[in-house]
Length: 136
Image 1 (cartoon, rainbow, N blue to C red):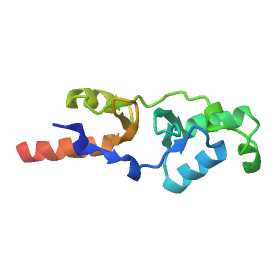
Image 2 (cartoon, rainbow, N blue to C red):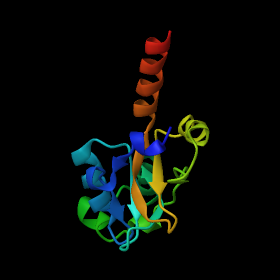
Image 3 (cartoon, rainbow, N blue to C red):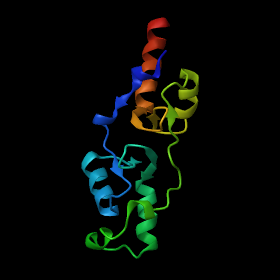
């Protein structure tokens, strides 16, 4: 099976850019209800994933600054403790399942490391459970 079946395209995935501030990232995550969000370069290359926990530790280590002061912190200053590792669009289904067991979502990139979307653990689990019901 082709992993593109599970892909949520970039246009439907909130993300931040490496030039965004901590405040911008927090506000986008709050608005979307995300616990983690991909970070991209201006030209769309995947850098990593920042989580609520990463931001919380950063805020704690900087005395819980005001929202206004958070505008002075680049999102790239936030130490990321667990980046979601991206997979290439050509990964096998077995490789995807191996990756998705340890991440809530898997970023998908093309051969130039350009972000094209994500695959969520939920979508894979729902597919596999429906497949088992049909075959079982």
